[in-house]
Image (cartoon, rainbow, N blue to C red; front, top):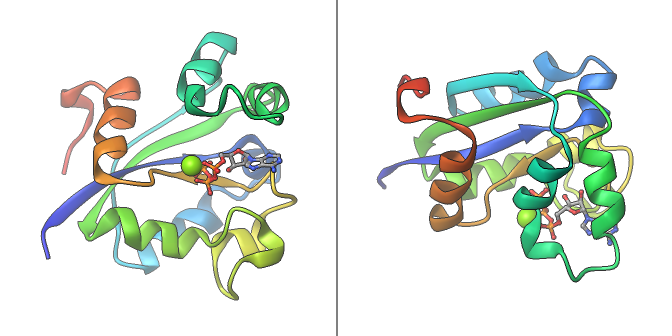
Amino acid sequence: MAIERTFSIIKPDATRRNLTGAINAKIEGAGLRIVAQKRVKWGKAEAEAFYGVHKERPFFKDLVTFMMSGPIVVQVLEGENAVAKYREVMGATNPANAAPGTIRKEFAESIEANSVHGSDSPENAAIEIGQVFKPDEIVG
Ligand code: ATP
Ligand code: MG
């Protein structure tokens, strides 16, 4: 299995509740390495651009407002099979359906305020990483 990179966001509901370290303990505990990291606050343009694939969905406007509502921590994670592995560690989008031990089961507040984002394919991971990090900000 090849070493992959994926893009992660710790969302505003989680930074608000001081859960950055608890979430990263689960990420590192699963064998993923945090090879880039910054804490930022997104404006409308950044949030809309990032979730642009969902712009026709009924929840888009609320999602953008939520993603701008507080600081977020953007990260690049590296490891074997990182995209699928991190999706597994995150759990299902709706915490009500998330498996025990997953980040969303333990920490998410709702289907919207679900604590973390993770890329859904290696192709999207490369796009998302490129939107947020310069190559020299990633140190493996
Ligand atoms: P993410 O892309 O954030 O990793 P995901 O891939 O599990 O999550 P998507 O379907 O891509 O889920 O939805 C993107 C985000 O939009 C979700 O994480 C959640 O914050 C929000 N969202 C998804 N579905 C709903 C919904 N039905 N109502 C409100 N918010 C939603
Ligand atoms: Mg998604």
